[in-house]
Length: 357
Ligand code: SF4
Image (cartoon, rainbow, N blue to C red; front, top):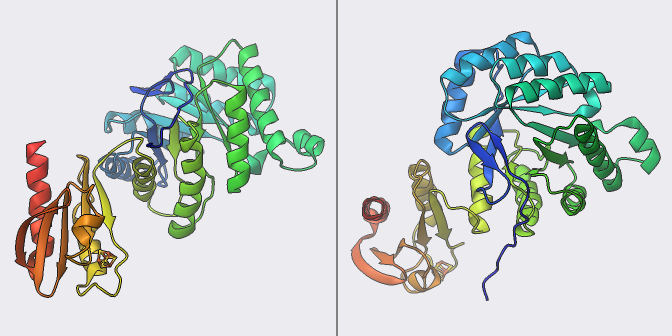
């Protein structure tokens, strides 16, 4: 029996043209690391993120210049922009007025009720949602005291308090994030929050690290939550170029069979039967196919005897050994050629597969 994810159906909100929650596809987000006020650099990075498949982009808004830049940035890009605000509620209002499609605030560091209400009023006036970002690193001091530390219960209570606060302003155009750099803590917090609310959830593991640890932590944390049906949009957080975050986000969704985008690679780890440089071949092919967007499963296998059978589910695949390369489709060998042509034959087969779709 195949594994089926029972997705929790949450309320649906809109971030610009992108639907979040309900039955909408789980959207992949990222955040720029340029100075937002440097409009040219920020737009250039967002263009690269769009090409990688990013569906919503968040930008830091540390000052008035950054808030004002949103208006110019939006004219040159196609995906919605979320303004990330810390501490100064006036910046949230300026960002909303500048055309941000959503605001991300941590009410814990925005200040008193009146300031948060002013932000909510700006969101209402501009008809944009607010993402309430509860973060283990900036949890309210009274909750830390009450729970004896930054615990799951403290994180969840903080999120529920913020929901109640929004309700007191008659505002429900929200999504929630409850992040920690600790993977088990994040998973537990999201599980509890999901059980207690039907607002859409933005899932992620904060400050997950560099490429290696960041990918593992995000895949485990985000992957476990998604497999349990929790999460309506995601952001992978990596100390790297943000396009890598988008790539990893889609790989997590692809691995769980939730969304398909571009190439899914099946390749063997090699063993004593392998007589070709499979590592180099796989790396070359992966780089060359990075920009593909149509879904296709390809296999890169180390030997002609077992390769086709071990990668039966691949749309197209190659295997090589003893001077001969083979091309196979769904486990059946369809062509033989000199081993040096393995890469070019696979790339040709991918193009043909795309043309037929
Ligand atoms: S496909 Fe061949 S080389 Fe690769 S792991 Fe299997 S048996 Fe070994």
